[in-house]
Length: 362
Image 1 (cartoon, rainbow, N blue to C red):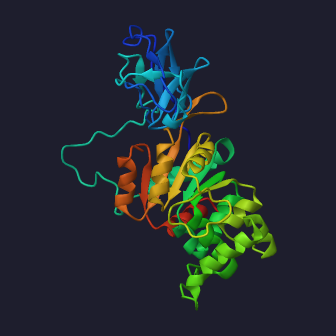
Image 2: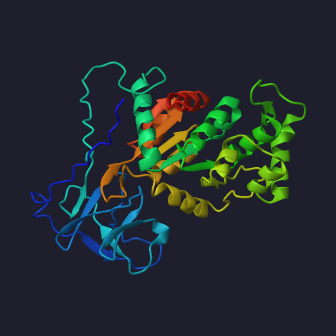
Image 3: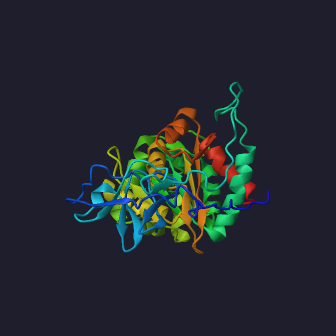
C-alpha cells in the first residue's frame, strides 16, 4: 500500500464569516489555578482564535484545557497551571461569531454518509480490519523516519512470549520512539525476562509454577534492591523483553503509578500530576499513538492527544491514534470520553503485536 499523509486544508479566513468576526474575548485570570467563568475549553481539533484582526492556530492543543494568549501566541494549559493575570480566551461558540473557530474536517477525511438503514455501522469484533492494518503499516513506515511513534501498553502484552519478542523487534527496528505504561507492564515483563513467568505462569507453556504468586513480588524486591532497572538488567544478565529492548536502544518510557501498585518499580511516578506531565512531554511531539489493552491509560492519553500536530517544517499534519482491545465496550468508551479521532481495532493484544511486527517484515 502506498501511504501518503492527508493534506491539511486550512479555513479561508479571507472570506465571510471570518472577515466580520470580532476579536476573541481575553479575560485576565483573577487568581492562580482558576479560569474566568466563560473560559473556552479546548477539543482535539484545530482551533483558531481571532486576535488583533488575525486568526491564530493553537499550535499545541489538548482536550479539556484552556487557551491563554501569551507572547503573541495561543498557549494551551491545564487549569492547575493558570496564573493570576493570564489572558484567558473566553467564549463558548465555535463557529467564528465570538472570534473562535473549530476546524473539524481539515484533513478532508470525507466522512461516509450513513443510510437510514444499513448493517454493520459500528466497529466490533466482526468488523474487517484489513484496511486498518494496511494503513497502520504505512503510518509506521512513514513515521519511523519522519515522526514520533508512541506506544501505550497494558500488562497483557507482557504475558506472552511471542508478544514480548516481537515488540522487542519493533523497538530494535525503530518503530517505537517512546512507551507509556504502568507499573504492571514493566513488572511482568521483567518477571518474564528473569523467571520466564508472568504472575507465576510460564509465558510460553501457561503452566503455573510452584509458589509462582511470589514471582512478581520477588522481581520487585530484587529490582528495588539494585536501585534501578538498568542495574537489575546488568547484574541479572537480562537479555530479552520489552523493557530490556527499550533500555538497550535508549528509548524513553514513562511508568505512571496507580493506587493498586505493588512495589512499585523504582522509576514509577507515584505523584499523578508528575506522571501526567511526563506523559505529556512525550505526547506533545507524537505523530502516531498506538494504545493496546489498557482502558485507563488509553483514556488518559486520548485526553492529551489532539488530532493534529505542527511538524518539523511548520505544517499542520494529522496525528494517527489507534486503540486496540479485545473488548468492544472499552473501545467505545474511549470515543465516549472525547477521543473521536481514535480508530479502534478489536482483537487480542498479543495477536496484534505479532501481526504488526510480521506485517512490517520483522
